[in-house]
Structure formats: C-alpha cells, structure tokens
Length: 112
Image (cartoon, rainbow, N blue to C red; front, side, top):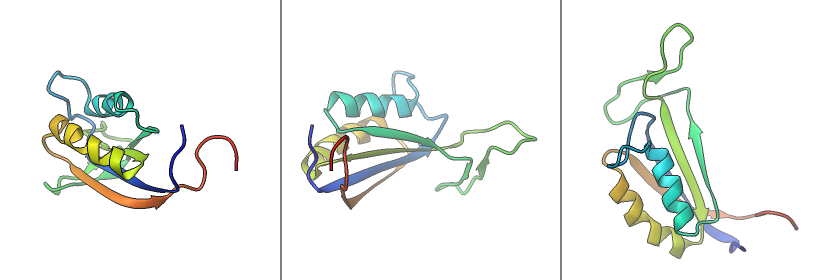
C-alpha cells in the first residue's frame, strides 16, 4: 500500500474506561474499524496524565490506582479515506475530542 505525501492525521482523545456500545474497549473498536476500512495504520497511545472537558485530572501516580487514563488513537491516511472513516468513528463514540490535521508523509514502510 502506498500513501500520498499529503495525508491527514486523525486523532481521537478519550478515557481508558470508555466503551463502544457492545462493551468493547473504545480504543479496540476504533482500531478494528480503521483496519476494516483499509486504513494505512492506527496507533493507540496511553497517557500518564491528562484532563478533558470535565477538568477532572486523570493520573497514574505510583501511590494511587490509575483511573480512566487518557487514550489517544492516531490514524494517518489519504484525506478522502479519513473523511470516509470519520462518521464511523463518531458513531462509536459518545464523548471524545476528534481532531484532524494535514501532515506530510516522509516515509511509510521500506524504501526511500
């Protein structure tokens, strides 16, 4: 699979405890949906500290249990493929932040 040099980075921010309607962890549901849609790839990042719209601080401090840590899913692909994926992502999520930005792909896989 080749990627054009001008792509889009889609980021979805939410909490680790968030679930899809069927009970699947939301990050898994999003990655599976991206794979089914033929995206070039998806990455799940777990943050040690963050807050969102509610301003509740979520942290992974040593002396307390990690509670609902921040999760970011990143997906990079051609603009038209990202545009087609966004409605499916919105259908999976209820409370999150979704952003998109233009990115230049320097390398994808082997080669120059």
